Length: 370
Image 1 (tube, rainbow, N blue to C red):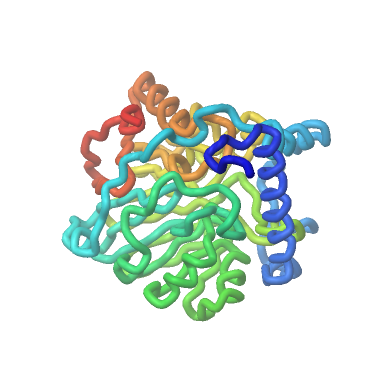
Image 2 (image 1 turned 90 degrees about the horizontal axis):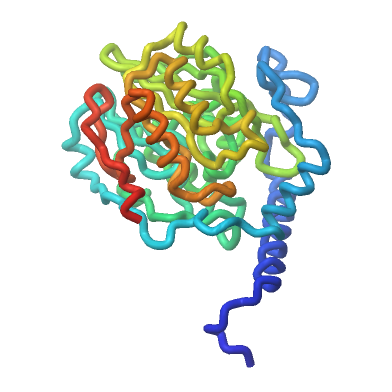
């Protein structure tokens, strides 16, 4: 019998990775019948066409050779060293009492693109993912680098959950179901709300918005704004639901939340129409030059911040899941250096650390201590 402490041969690791990926893909395909969206039509939306929802500018498609190589790299070729941290990354734990006592206008990064904001004395949550893996199953797929800084059941009542799109690292079915009882309303792009209803969320708790639609809740205004991305949770429902960024405004402050997006001219339009912004929560992570049309490179994130008229930049979509080929800390390090060189204010709070939206305190490059 083989010694269980003996490292698995590289070929064995590759076969195991291929088998796991095949199982995840098969499970995702099985989810097609549960999606509840693949056959729905939204003719009232200018974004909806013959092939589902579409971007203002069509992303460049990879040829079959590049697509094949990409899948080979993911499943067989292996990833370079450093895409996962060697040890635990710092997390500042949170309690319900701390949140209740926090000043209005405070935000907390809870991981990846999950951000908790306290506005108007109430709490608002973006793209909540509390599961162990960003995957259709919890026994395979990208696994968290860190636990959330607060347990799901310890969160306070939520005035709204704001969703950007339906990918697994942004829309987590188990988390949504757990939050349904303590959330007043889920604000979603078109079609995403239909998924939630299919999962058991009461329809009267769901508001679906097209780009530039607005809704106000308790003195906080939410505008669904364009982004450059795509959607789908199965092999049969690509672009069946819309994707969006969000502008969040009160009388005192403005926040931009990017969701997932490539760089596009829409940032300038959003900045001109609804900016400038006190803080931009902009994706910087899980990027690659092969898919930069739908996920920004760090220099593009910096330019998007400038286009939006942002005052302080908070990079999100990093430090929680291994979703690309770059080093796990590369997004933060690269954007931090670019911002320093350009004289742009950047805030990089530790996961769970409170940050004032209007007057963000100095933060440190915490990832360098890993």
